[in-house]
Length: 385
Length: 209
Image (tube, rainbow over all chains, first blue to last red; front, side, top):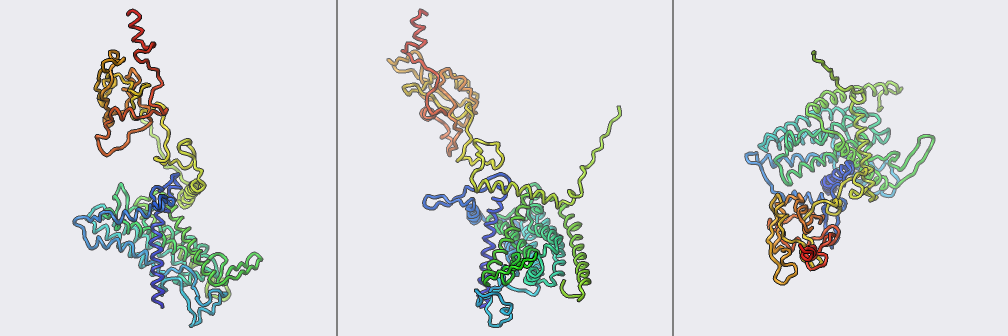
């Protein structure tokens, strides 16, 4: 049963993510068009019984996929065949794997779909429940840093195995940029770990449900992590690995067809996963404001509203809330990509090492001081802040 | 004279501008404003027409094959040969146009009208009238040179794309099939056929010249 569950969840998430890449391609094109007073893609059409379905340009994503499949699978002469073919896989798979530990909805207790939530269910050994994440790892979010780091290898291998100077330069740039921002990215989350006292995504969401969203206790970390995450995706403000006038298309200059498509969709999947990560750590994960496990609870400003919902509705609201938050963050990331001009290479390095890294360290220091101060105030001393 | 030096200072930036973050938010505000405006126009369908209102605020894209910007009245398009009332070409094969043509893209083979035709002796007609539209530079000199208003470029059609070079060579029938922007194949200028009382040649002949 466990394995069937796991396989179904994996298939579901990978399916959603891969299709999200196609949809994001459309979103990106259409959104940028709207921002720049254009119409955007709208010509590709599927003809069904004489009716041309254009779906506001969504068909272009399908056309792109077909184009990539039928393009000549050209390979550079003198490159390393094995690594050249391996690189797009290494670039695409880690972003997909990142989703393994991200919970996207509250645990579903199958036996109690219509009941009011009871914390005793979780302790009941006979209870059938489906945790809404692929797996729970003891290392929690540290797994994400480990796997995200592997994405560098794909870019570096692609640059090296293409037997092209521009590819090599692009690969080097990608590698150094990603390694630099990995440091700031990891350190920016340390403050959150200190406050949540856990590296488990589930514990983080529970803490945020009981207290407040992470963005309110760690605003600096949110900005730092978001910046580093955008840099990790190698998209426009930070897109030095590719640049028409400098290094052609960077490390994927020599890639054509579906191999290029894997790099491109890997980039978009990274946008999804980094948004999901931001949601879990800073925006309360699947928690909707004022919704607890029992339903809508508002006990502030002298009001005392309790609106109890059946368990499955709470789970559904949680799932929708997670999807909404992720969609909003994706929108923000795409908006940033089409708003900001790209940095110069030295500016990227300066931002990473001389601003983000010290700021992340400062955040750790401030968080530590804050926790000490808070604990000192409380008479019990120690315990969770 | 001593050289004067002008010291250029770096533009002063406030702390808010230096911090970059605030400027990022401002920039996002600008793009968001455009985004919502564009999306609103797209969803509601009342975007300004790029044809009638090309300088309006908002989306300015012209969906070309579906929407076309009207050409000016005097815009020079593909040539046409104007018709007489009886449907024959107005051209009298005087070769003025092919002489004026800087690209030498017009070929005319003049011919006499057959014996017994009223026009015989007054004018010739083009047995062949060929324009190589690939050579043509659309300067309009042929139209200027024509004394009979027989060749015009007021079709409002720009050169169509073909697969074969030979398709670009338009013959007499093709040129005569083109329609002007006013929808007729004729010319608004009057034309006096030989034999008409108004024909100047007849007047001269009977006027004792």
